[in-house]
Length: 397
Ligand SMILES: Cc1cc2nc3c(=O)[nH]c(=O)nc-3n(C[C@H](O)[C@H](O)[C@H](O)COP(=O)(O)OP(=O)(O)OC[C@H]3O[C@@H](n4cnc5c(N)ncnc54)[C@H](O)[C@@H]3O)c2cc1C
Image 1 (cartoon, rainbow, N blue to C red):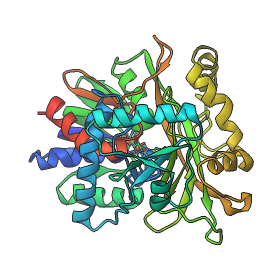
Image 2 (cartoon, protein in one colour):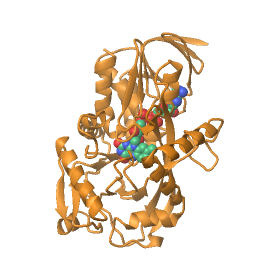
Image 3 (tube, helix red, strand yellow):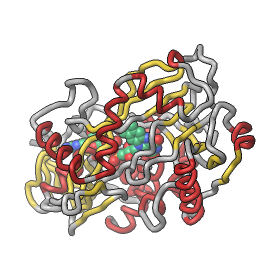
Image 4 (cartoon, rainbow, N blue to C red):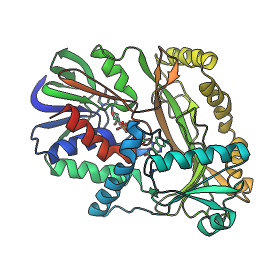
């Protein structure tokens, strides 16, 4: 077994792990090692998301999501500019389907303004100027700061930037266990560290549990699949068209997003699945699947928000139900205008078992030598560069 002594050891080369590594290097820290179990960076949520740089509309004032999203959006745009990564600055509209959703839309407007986010309520005529195909009940909310990137291209740029700054990324190096207070076994390495930062996404809870932390919290997986507008169809989408979400849940609902190359994706869904990497029908199922199923069953009976997701979302494996959701956001959409894609991502969602609730905000646990980033769900991609600053300043200096 090879031995490494380092100041900082980061687990996970997703957007959060690499952003933390970059931030440490910007603070002139020298010995930074990232352990990644896969062959490349960003093979999970960070390379499989919608690529939307959120503006910070939805999040409760005072939450970490609210405090990191606005500045994260700005920093990510500026990082992309400095690296020549394309950012599509089209803005986004949130449309209402009925009077009840209109009330929630007004609540979102207030929330956004409290967070210092630029938004504007627009009427149907103004909406038509922004997004001619979108439809709404009376008013829609326009967010000019929302933008779109290709997440894979961002991940590559961030990885390159980290390695140029001297960060050492060890691929095919899964965390296995803590050997003692400041040593881990990961892949073929025994790594001694001063500080370990756990940014392992879907497995971050498992690592925190190994450390004896956060035993009341576990992650359960929700799969997002996408369809796509056929190029031959009549519907033209400029940017992003989102529904008013069910604010009991952290998911934003199936939406239209035009990616930087002009392809329009519709999705993602939020279906409970039975493996943390359960991307295919059977791919990603394992020994843990039964316990995830049991957790889902408990939540089904105890949590209303989860119940509505669990009962409604799986229907969207059937293209008609996907189509039904999408059609609610636009004036005209033909069933044959949409086609299947293989794009899929998994959102690991933290559950607090003492309250039997879905945790809505990012969540951090720490002890003297370790920091555990749990629940880095959306908008963590957007927030990452600023979130990393907060983590480093508070826990790593
Ligand atoms: C379908 C979907 C759409 C989304 N859309 C958006 C969006 O439009 N905008 C937005 O801001 N956010 C979005 N998100 C959320 C965003 O993608 C995530 O919040 C973000 O990518 C989380 O980053 P991460 O680094 O924490 O996790 P990950 O990207 O999952 O990275 C964790 C890394 O840790 C590694 N790892 C795990 N276990 C181990 C181990 N034992 N040892 C070593 N390495 C390990 C994994 O291989 C992985 O590379 C979306 C997410 C999904 C799934």
